[in-house]
Length: 439
Ligand code: PLP
Image (cartoon, rainbow, N blue to C red):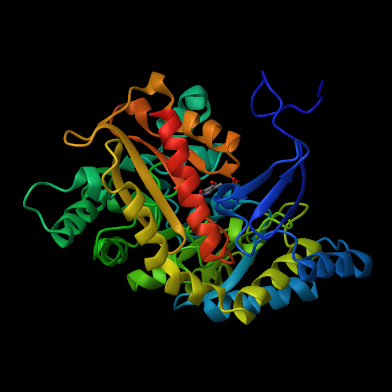
C-alpha cells in the first residue's frame, strides 16, 4: 500500500535503497546497473561524497535567499563556470529547477525579447515533430511527441511543427547526408515564410534528439543552415540541450560539435547530475541587452529560481566533471562503446539503427529491418524491453514513436561518464540477454 501517486496508477515500483557509482541497490537485494542514468541525468555516478558535502555545507550556511532580494555565491560561481564553457556570445545564466521550466523560460524570454525591441507581432514559435521539450503546457506545446500531447491537446497553445532531421528515415535514396541536412533545414525557411517572417519569435530544437527519437544527431551542416535561416529572418535560435548537453555527447555542449552558437540554450539533467534538481537557461549578451535597454526586467521569476543549495550541488558536480576530465573521457571512450554495440547488435534482426554520440546511444527496434517497419504500437516493445531489462538488473530508457506509425521504438543508453569498460560490457551483455527474452 503506497500513498504516492506513482507513474503507474496500477503498480508500485521497487524501492531503491542506496546507490554508488554505476549501480542502484534495491530493497529487493538486487543491484541495478544504471545504464541510462535515470533519464540521462546521473553523469558523475551515484554517491559522490564531495557533492553531498557541498550540498550540506550550503544548506547549513545559506539554504535559501529569494532572488528578488539577493544573489548567492554558488549561483554566481556556477554562472561564471557555465559562461566560460559556453558557445560564443553566451553571457548570462538564468537558473530554474527542471528542464521543462528551462524551456518555458526560454520561450517566454524570446517572446519578451521581441517586445522589448518593438516587434510585438513576433509571437509564433516553430519546433519539430518527434521532439520532447518537457511536460509543462508551453514545453508540451513546443514538443512534437504526439503520444504525450494527445491527452492535453485542448490545453496547448498553437505552435508550428516542422519535420525532424532524422537521417535513418528521412534521407532519400542517393542523397548524401549533407544534401539531406540542407533539405531538412530548408523546412524551417518554408515554415517562416508561410507563417510570415515578421511574426516568428523563435525556433526551438534539441541539438541531438533524446527521448522521442533516441539519440538522433543532426546531419552535417543542418544546424549551420538553421542558424543562417534564423539570422536571415530575425528569429531566435533556442537549442534544447536538457538531455544531450553537459558532456553527454563527448562535448560540453552538443552544439559545439556543430560549430553553431544559439541565442538561448536550455540545460538541466547532467548539470546537477541528479543530486538536486537544477535547470539553466543560457542567454546571449545580445538578448540580455534588449532587456537592459528596454523595460529593465524579465517578467518571470519563480520562488525557487537560483536556489543556493541546488547551485552548490551543481557547482560541485561541474567541478568534478572538469577535474576528472570526464567530458574528454566520454569522447575518448565513444569508439569503445560504439564498437560494443555494433558487435552485439549490428546483425540483430530487430535492430534497425544503432546511433549516438559520446555516451548517448540508442537502438531503434523495428519489426522488419529491410522495410524499417516499426512494431505496432500495441506491441509496447520499448516498454517490454525496459521491464525485462529491469528484471535482469539493467536500467535502460525506453522510447516509442509508434503512435504516428512513422518511428520505431527505441532503447536509450546514457551511462555515467565514470562507467568502467567492464560496466559498459556488462550493460551490452545484459541488453543482449534482454533482447533474447523479448524477441
Ligand atoms: N527537454 C528535453 C530535451 C528533455 O529531454 C527533457 C526531459 O526529458 C525536458 C526538456 C524536460 O525536462 P524535465 O523532465 O526536467 O522537466
